[in-house]
Picture 1 (cartoon, rainbow, N blue to C red):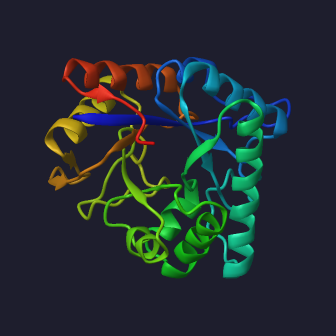
Picture 2 (picture 1 turned 120 degrees about the vertical axis):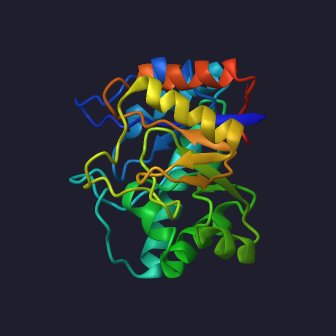
Length: 251
């Protein structure tokens, strides 16, 4: 059993700090670095990439809608060309900084509302995949199992990787419970750690109605902006290692 443990990092902006990037980078194997559209700024991106390189943590570009005011968590209607260009812009910016720090972007993970939208919307999924294909078609895209992104990416020759969320509730259909609903984000360290172990070892997740949903994932995410994110991530890491899981980046 080999699992990647990823977290959203570099989400500070200007004088505002969000999460403990340094502590999380000592726990995870992949870092989804905010590209400046939902969070992050040039200094934060540079510092996060440099710290990731120092620790041997894989760097991913966490592309999003241009939505600083709402942290990229509201859906937006964009023409495919505009969305493609904005994703390409973000990807190129973070990869440029990562290379200057001695690393590189090795995968792409959409953020927030964009992530959820392209799981079901082939038009916006196509725009995101077109941007990745234009920049570097070898870069894998993280997405949910069953997402339409898999089919769209395969047609463009772009690889995809299945991802699961240890700290998010799931519907019986295997989708994420919307954040606006109670219980959508799980904060209990023991519960999150147990869910991560279930995902990795048993290949399933317990849905919000108590049913067991099959789930195959190569990477497990713990959000970096939640309270006690470091404790959650450490709990997940400890539980996976105790179960005999090898923690290794998928790239």
